[in-house]
Image 1 (spheres, one colour):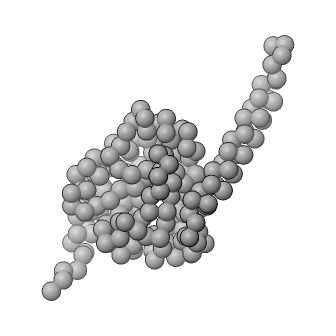
Image 2 (cartoon, one colour):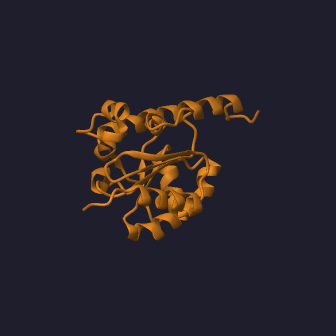
Length: 191
């Protein structure tokens, strides 16, 4: 042991306690950012409430999903510490760029803390919106059909906010393009 330095175990315990406190603070901050949105309603009725959700973006601005009403929406739950999440981000980015002109919206919901997300995005920018959800992202993803709470998890919604497709695990551009084509074929035509 080096004089003046705490033992390695003590350092790890302090780091774990600090991470837990930061996660709790992030969760409280996220709830405050969602003023006017009932989180329990979102969890109990996600299809009807998806457009009512609001999140804080890494730049401090608010992202409201209401602005995507009437458009197909792809929500992707991810974290900087999740290797499959990071591997699929180029596919999500390509999907956002190619299908955005067709009306699709893509939002990445980070189950992570602000600092790592900001640092990651500064090195790896994406063309789609990212929101900070913290560890509450896991509860939200479970309410949308992610029974295990694992990451990454992706859900495609129609313009009315109805979940049409779900996928647990790493996805690909071809799979997402297939969802878009399938949903376009299923969309009823208006007279």
